[in-house]
Length: 435
Image 1 (cartoon, rainbow, N blue to C red):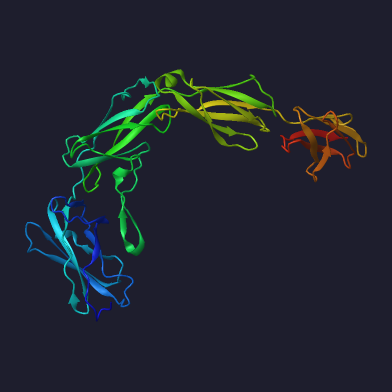
Image 2: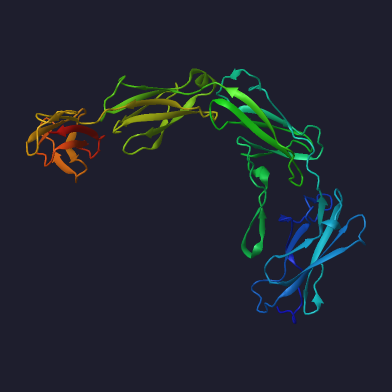
């Protein structure tokens, strides 16, 4: 359809403030309009063979005075795409309900007006923040036993147009809005469908009850909350702070001091109070310091315990960070286990004694490299930063080299071992002086 021919069609897919228009006068859409009110409608079809620009005309009036009409237009609109226009802010009075409609104009011919859409202007955010209370985690200076979700009651605090609440453990709140799809059609995302951050009040100006698992299982915890009215305008935020004792599981290796290179079985035990509140069903185990660090989930037995076998292959050491998860969703704080290893080689010489002056230019000396851990396959060494040289370990996992200095003075020898599994161990320095 072109601007000069054809019969214009009434615009479809009408939106106000990126929300679908309500054609029910008793259930208008509540919108903030201090910067004006954005309206949209689609003229014609994108499949039209006549696709010249058209005009979409919008008019709005208070339902109490249909003669007070404000008109805006979107010229040069594309067929099949949302045509956006903005009614000025001074066309509206806070608290009043308005009707608006749209028509398409092409070639001097206008379509029929669309059905009426109804909006109520709400330019006043809730005047007071909500109140917050908890029946099982009181906000005093005493430490609470963790293990069960936090039962929170939010109340509108006497503000009669509060429709719901927005809450966060960080103090940051997600943006309420719409995504824009094909042809410019908005898809408004109802915030109350996101139960991680939003809860609808049980009645306008009422309250809401939440069961929340905090982001960590112990410490000083703060929940931030604000009220939302029907236009999703937010009140000032308020907070609720409470204290939770550690609920960390216990981590015990099969041997008190496992050695480097051993596969070690660990027993994971739940905090007794957590297990008594709700059965621990699994553990999250995060390894650090090893050759292939990862996080794994380990299923717990009926009594809440579990076992996990892991390689201790960190050249400097290994550690485990373990959290339990209960049947009711509670996630504990971390239980920790760690150990360090000395995987450096032992270096000695029959001539060149460490930290002493000995030998001389051209005087050969034997250097012996010996392991402190099992499984060493080779040694790599360098004198004074020269190119590295690698030698295989012998039957007793030792190696010997014969070396003669080319000049006198200060020398440092750096040596590190490599295991049969290809793990490069921690380097060590051997310092000596040549006469």
